[in-house]
Length: 507
Image 1 (tube, rainbow, N blue to C red):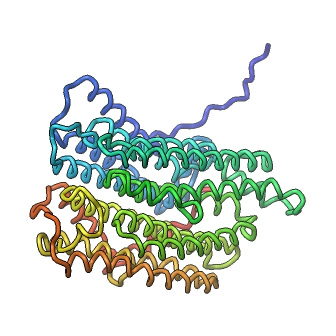
Image 2: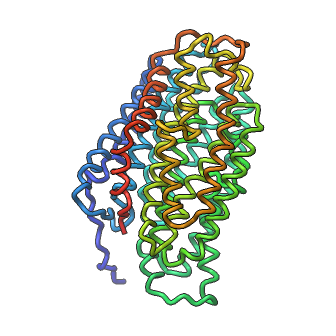
Image 3: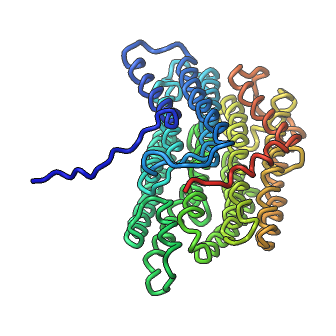
């Protein structure tokens, strides 16, 4: 029997892979050391998790800077992409882990019953944060459908457990179960879509799929299986991004999961899914843009309308922000729809606009849910009523939360305005005027949601007791999120100039 000697091992560029190695290595070291030592003092797990994510983020930032004068490329025989588009998303993933580690430590420090098991301040909880970050890092830079699917599963399995991590609350366990069941359906759609695309093109590499389809002459009779695969991929990612009508899990899971986990899901999960979706359709399927762009248009319309309208009729703040995140997903999809106008000089603006939007929303989501966690930790509920009069007991906290809410509404001089302006400008530049107008109208409708929360905080009489002092971790999370929101809102030039370098994707 003769052995195949044609196999060539891929070249491994260790520094290019260092962010992934840092996340995986930090996670394994925490598990090993934590298993061999007594329980660490409170806050040390969070410090180790934040440090690990910070190191990975710095390594990614160094590579991001180096790519300013270098062309995008692929790694490990095309399995991973190294471009500024993916690296910025990877940096955002690491920032989300740092913020969530601080928020988790803050929630644990404010626990009213220290005798009960602090399930959210355990070693496993922080290790799962790093595991989810590793899956998200793979997703945002994956240049192969199989690798992307592995990243999705690593991220999803971690989030399932995190959503159900509060064993003292039935709602948390129910949220984890709902997320697991519907997430399993989404994974099945994705896997079947990958199989159909592979059966049509003979490739799983995203760049190679784009090359094969660009060289083919489209014959409708032969496109049925390919289009079915593309549709299934869109459905699968629709679940992950929480697009309407695949959003049904979002409000229940967001409400039932621990609040700091909800912020983590809304930030890191959204970044990973949106970036992976944009990369897939822009790199692999530009030759079939005329087929998938109308579907994206329809999903964007439904997501904007349903998310905005249903958000304003909720009475629980976490459900309000859940439907708000659905509406924000619609704005991100506006950028993808603009990117689908292949041949237009402004199509590339949609790519950068979608990425900038999800990056800025990630900061807003973590900060907003950190604020909700502080209030809910004092009142043990997230009903809108417990936010009444918060400004009278802690005006600084209320002011910070108000800034984040105004940014989500898209008020000028905040990062939210820059994000919304970017996607709407991309839609107008590609002559998607209907979608641009609808996005602006939905933003006005959704503004009522944020005004309801602000009115409760500033004009109503207090009905709950909010601590006059917030822990250092809580203050840092809110302070940094508010500072980023205001700085990028007042001085957006750097961010807008950065967008021009985000349109060159590795192929």
